[in-house]
Length: 262
Image (cartoon, rainbow, N blue to C red; front, side, top):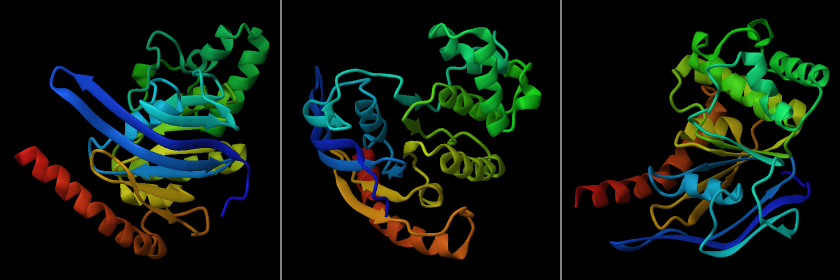
């Protein structure tokens, strides 16, 4: 169990969306602490509010009620200390891999020599240094994900917020990135909050797996994952932990299915 200081704390956080059709409660009374250097995965049925929860922790949208604390202070702005990596990566096709990684550093007005040094460091970390002069359209899906990760790491955030970043990748590429992300997390000691719909992925990556209910989403169960690292997604020990999590998740998926067919 991680014994570091609490980086992020959500206290009774709820989120309601209002429209002409009335009020839609998405999150209800979320209470969660995430510690320094912890890798926390959030899973739940489709559409339950996982991304909304991530957006609230990034301060990209406000909670309707409750409190979000970052290092014991109210979260009042979206800052470079917490960077989001979305499924849609937002890479710039007119820039090379190197220039994409340097982009945030250039905005900070860092000198070109220092930008290049930092970009090279993280391109080596994600095994893309040989592709630094390629353009984005010349890369595979997995390579694009590595560029996005290198770009985020180059900004040296304290926390990475990752929203289903591997969902569209093929199984082989995804498994490779699971191994690489575990090593990067170990080497950089970043705090990571990772949203996924894939239970095996969550168990492979996370120190803890947070299971959300169907809407309005509440924290249903928290599983501590005490398997040694690095983890292989097909290992027997990992699969043994997947089963009880799936048992918790299954009735929530069935609720969503029933609602969608009513």
